Length: 337
Image 1: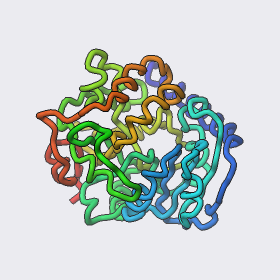
Image 2: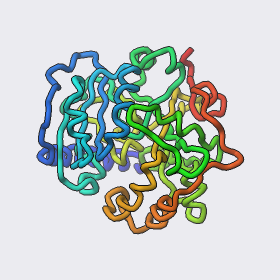
Image 3: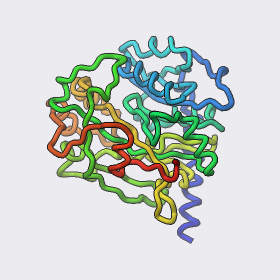
């Protein structure tokens, strides 16, 4: 009876989220619409960005090289030239909004609408501008190879843990220029100190840990950022993201592990938050209060980030490609050979 009731509630929650997304479509004003160019088998990438002109040149080129054919992006009132940069890209469709990021469930209402409108039937990669997808064989096999294998296995999702990358030395000292590989600067990560539990009723993993938990939330680990995500999905217009890309409905799409305890295939999202601009942005993000449901709880986090911390420690590991990450158990081939 309890399982039936949970399923009923989640079904109605999904419908409410989709109805909300339909209503929020009025927040979006098209800047350049190239969606008529989308082909049936295109892999699509969706993102909501604000003031990301520095990161976007590399972000776009990296994911193009992985196999993304079209980008559908919402610009949330950027002031740094992001709109002009994106408008000039021949594979980008762009919408602009001045509506509140938090009021749109941190951009999810906009993303869910675009996914429902344009993503149905496509493999869709939903990312932030500071994320880069890596997966087994990503150096030799593109997303078409990965999604083709997933299709053959009857899988319609591919999960990934967000891996915070950081430099050795104070964050603000490490220079970064537009178009550069951010992970030539951010070469280090925490290889352990991750905790995991399954959340009910959706069955999604709750992963926490890494340098942010270690440095900023050591006395309140339950507040540390959530690291589990499901960024790559063969989308259906009936699907909906619930909490960033940390969870989605229907709940079967949240399953990282096989029902028999074996590992399903998974990747990682390399996270470039800790480029030098993070220190300057910390005060702005604290003042805006748009990134957390209860933003006041994270004031200390922003204050410590503003102090230009050194996240490196004696147990930090240097990034050397996907094979090293798999050897540490941070991603899995899950039968993909």
